[in-house]
Length: 160
Image (tube, rainbow, N blue to C red):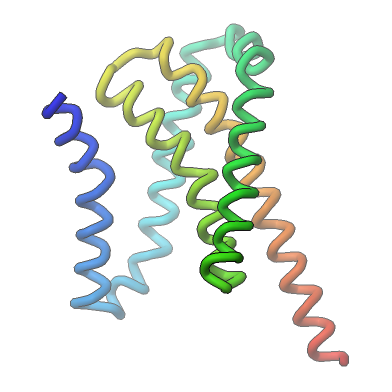
């Protein structure tokens, strides 16, 4: 149990603390490095999901049919609640959007971390893989909607 806790701390908490320390000490460097680190994180997660999907082969479609509706429901509900609570508690559209994406994205990532990295159990990674595949779609759609809304608002502000 202690070993699992320590692995989770190393993979999830320490990088966040390191990022916070770097941003506090060298904010210009942190701002320049942020896009690269974000892209790297997305690529690593995408490669993990692709490798699991390839390993599952044709069974992936069966798993999508079985776990997909529950995974999609969980993803959409957590994103909706994150957005609504973020808006209500933080009174900030930008922070509500961030909370929405964070709660929607980190569930799958953490579950994949536990099932593949700590437990090293491919069958247990099926549900998180399905969730992760679907979360990329929902997060992308949410981001596109937000960008469209912002573009429309900017256009309305410049013309009106």
